[in-house]
Amino acid sequence: MTREELYQSIYTHDTIYLPPHEQATAALEVSLGCSWHKCTFCDFAKDTFQIHPLERIEHDLKILGKLRPEDTRLFFLGENAFCMSTGQQLAVMELVHRYMPGVKEYAMYSRIDDILRKSAKELLDLAGAGVQALHIGVESGSDSILEARNKGVTSSQIVEALKRLDETGIDYYLTVIPGLGGRSFSRLHAIETARMLNQVHPRNIWCLKLKLWEDTPLWQEAKAGTFDEMTPEEILREERLLIENLNVRDCLFEDTTVLDQFTIQGVLPGQKEELLRAIDYLLSLRG
Image 1 (cartoon, rainbow, N blue to C red):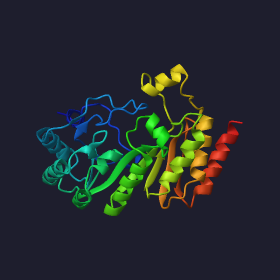
Image 2: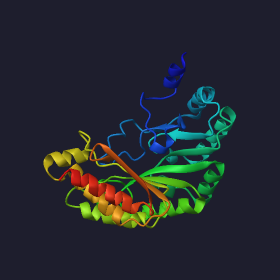
Image 3: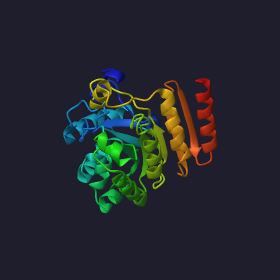
Image 4: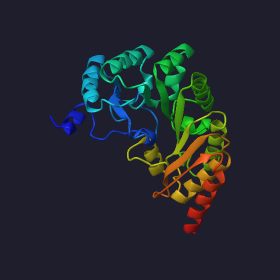
């Protein structure tokens, strides 16, 4: 088999979705689909949720270890791979030590409730075993928007889970969705999300403007006229309000979807004014 064919043999889909800061990280598929699968805006959770058998994971690890023998960091693929039990994760890590002995750090996607289901000791055990970062879609800090979009958690639960990660030393990278509240709740979305984020210590806040995926419940709401979708300019003004109210420290803020064509990024709080000026300039181009 060619190198490309070997890669294709260990992944379910041709396209692998990794966060921006993990693009160079080796990826091991340990699960498929989302354990929640109920968010009204999501188009990614199309696969039936499953955690792969340890036998399959070991088989894929043997191949990945030969393809990437020098890697020191590994990303566990799955839409929320952190839902695996602590025992399952530690068992996979034991296999990693055998087939990819250079790996010292692990990262993966997680839901907030995945974190809350684990005890303080379990989180410490996982951190000690090398879990270094979780990538989490928090989407909003507004309870009413979280409930309307069927996210399955509240803003207080988000804060509780992230503070537990702070205590264990596991870094977290957060995704927020500007526009998720629609035009009617735009200001609420921005201010409540900033309020929530100001209580925690994310390494990164990644904004991805809302995209309405065809046939999702939220797309159907918009089609029926019960969700007022915002224009790219309105979404950027909402994001400006979010940044204006953020007081996080040592955090990279970025948006790769500005006006559907630009990227902005800056480290907060030092570059807050630069971010605001960049947004004002982009908005001025739209008149």
